[in-house]
Each structure stands twice: as C-alpha cells, then as structure tokens.
Image (cartoon, rainbow, N blue to C red; front, side, top):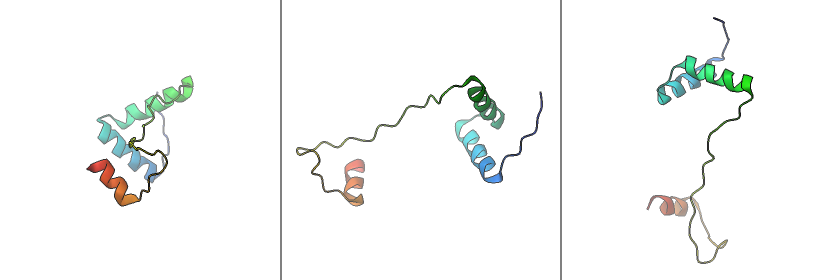
Length: 74
C-alpha cells in the first residue's frame, strides 16, 4: 500500500543522513520503525558503557576536561 506522510524538513534531513550512514534506504528505516511501533518492540540497542579509569583512591580524582582527554586519548 502506498501512503503519504508529512515529515518536518529537519527530521527528514536527519533521517536521510542516517540512511546514508547506515547504508540503508529511507523506506527501510521507516518501515522498521512502523514494525516496531505496531508490534510493541523496544529498541534493541546496547547501552554504551562509559570508559573506566583505574584509581588507587576511588572517588578522589580531580579531573577537568584536559585531564579527561589525556586519560582517554593518551
């Protein structure tokens, strides 16, 4: 069945970027979203675990953005 849906321009641009990034069509993304909604499925995405930083004295780190950057990317 064919239908028409009005999607706000900013949201459509995001959808188009996501489709290109994921290598899927807009149609495939929209259909998957509709299937999840109709079937009551929840998102299956895993939650990202924040990086852990070892410390000899937990809770005593004095961090600022520069120190965090050094810890993560050094």
